[in-house]
Structures are given as C-alpha cells and as structure tokens.
Length: 74
Image (cartoon, rainbow, N blue to C red; front, side, top):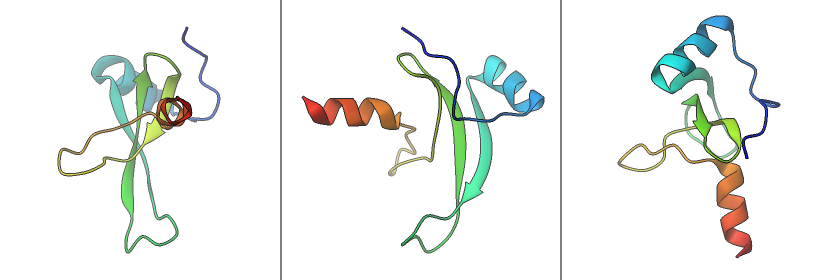
C-alpha cells in the first residue's frame, strides 16, 4: 500500500520530472563524516511512496531507507 508523500518537499517542476522520469534531483547535501557533498534524488518506492536517497556504490543504486530498515528486522 502506497503512503502519501510526507517528508520529501518537491517543487512543481520536480513533481513533473518525477511523474515523467520516475526520478528527480532534490538537493546536494553533506553528511557527518563525508568529505564532500552528494546529490540526493527523489523517487517512488512501490511500498513507501515518494522517498529520497543518494546513489550508492559503483552502480549508483538508489535505495529506500524505510525498506532497508524493515528488511533488517527480519
């Protein structure tokens, strides 16, 4: 069941990109311990709706944080 967007704030242009392309850049951010900034992207998770993440690993995969947390519980 898809939940409504609650945490990811998108502009009108970002919403259009998300609908057409399935992904849209949001902001560049720096997390504690990182040497630089990374581009974050909003995308649609089939389970949790619109979520935000940064590309991981060599293949630059976007992952839903909520799905990862749920999978750790099992």
